[in-house]
Amino acid sequence: MFTYTRRAQYHETDQMGVIHHSNYVKWMEEARISFMDELGMSYHALEELGIVSPVTGISVDYKRPAHFDDEIEIRVGVSKYTGVKLEISYEMYDRTNEKVCANAVSCHCFMKGSRIVSLKREVPELDELIKNNCSE
Image 1: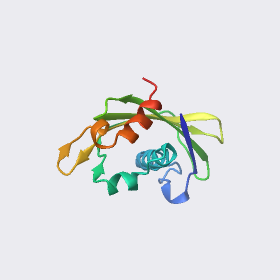
Image 2: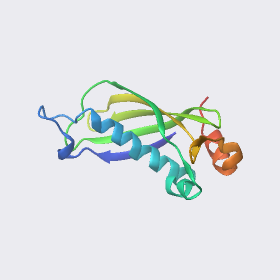
Image 3: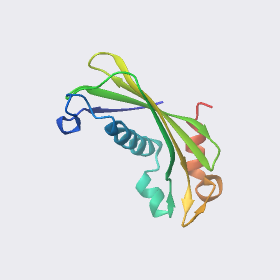
């Protein structure tokens, strides 16, 4: 499991003074990109190989609100991986009050041009890195 930490920003709050729900999805992307860096294959390096990894599905289960200046720890893990499909889980934890704010999942595939590809064939080193970090 990888941990990404960020501080909730004022511009991310809504009229009620809590972090707007749409920002959790942005935080997931920040954490996923950092997770890729930590694995040793940045998303930018993957794109240089002609591979992209679009989001095919996303789900967020909101537990309690986060507020401006809260320190949010996002625990990232690979929950499922087939070589073609990738599912990443996220637990967004408010270190300020030691409570879970949200649990989420994002689903991805891998594409080269307009076709779906297998990482095992296209980028075997990344395939191994992901397999080694899969909790499945």
